[in-house]
Image (cartoon, rainbow, N blue to C red; front, side, top):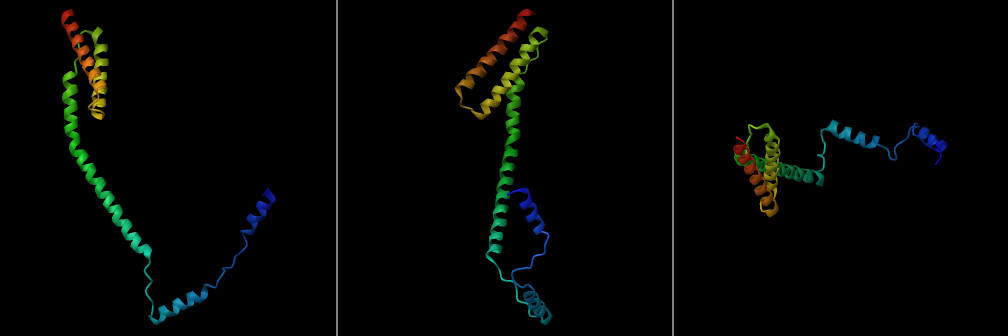
Amino acid sequence: MNEFEWLRQTRALREPVSPRRDLWSGIDAALGQAANGTTAPAPRRASHRLQGWLVAASFAGLSLFAGSLAVHLREQPVNDQMAASTTGAARWHPADPRLAGAAVELDAASMELHQAMEQAPHSPALQRLLERTHKQQTQLQQMEHQAG
């Protein structure tokens, strides 16, 4: 299709188009029934029943979501307290500025390992890394005590 055919088709869209069947006879009949007071109720379709089921299903889904959110929020403070107790005890700020950078790095590594342990609590590799990090923190604290 070239540009001229495309323009011809778009110009044809401007022309009025008559409907395939006469709509006025149905409109006149409906208006005549309304004037006589004999309006027939609209037939119920299967889509109304389907719409009711969809509303019920969406309500059930929202209820499940709200319930799971409530359970999650109820359990979250317990997890936050556990994380604060495990990481709060491990926080250590040395007075010696030469050891401060290493302490910050070991604290960050310990926090990341605790987060990883929450996702995979039975991982032996993560457990070994966590033990090694705590051992290094202990060695660093001993170095500070020895330095005076």
